Image (spheres, one colour):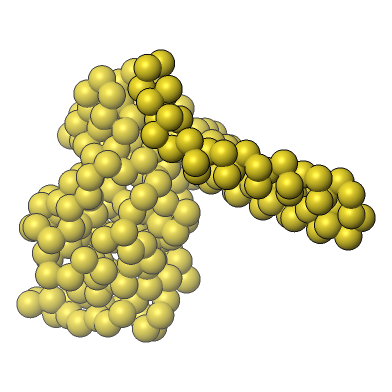
Length: 268
């Protein structure tokens, strides 16, 4: 309080000037219609600008919540699309229902021979190993390790990755692998040399596993050639996903996984 008094005493001339100036300005505004109108207009503009800035800031901080709601809605719609009857190799047709959860990528590697992602969902979110991981553009990988709050994803950009995929046009299927050369190109193997290939044809998941439903996008044929024995193709597949720029992903749960596991052959 003493410091405040000292300030006023030290700057009494300036404080007195501000006081007299404020009184004069107030009297001028009140006694002249033109000045009062200008003052009110300026005040309204200032209030409007403050409100606009406040509204923009509020919208910015609501983006996270809105984005999460959009992800959840996308998960619901994708689950509905995946829930369809798919023929299996067990001489029966099982209705394999899928549900999706959204997750955020915390860490992503793509420049090593064996790359992984870390996502912010784990055991507490009922996430388990062997769940498929995708984006709205295509496949990303398969969960191979979980902790309480996080999970590790074996990326398709991993030399140990093996995903069953097929040619969308002809349904011929093979194995998707990676040669550790480019982060935007993977390899499709085990396609017979009798199959007719066309550059630009789409590659999708086959549905012949319990991890991914059929027809999830993978990429397109970029080039192809024969293997050393010249009886199988090695197809270069240009990925739909930009594996170097992943933010949000979807985790695929096969709700019939336990039932399907009981039907597997002993050597599978």
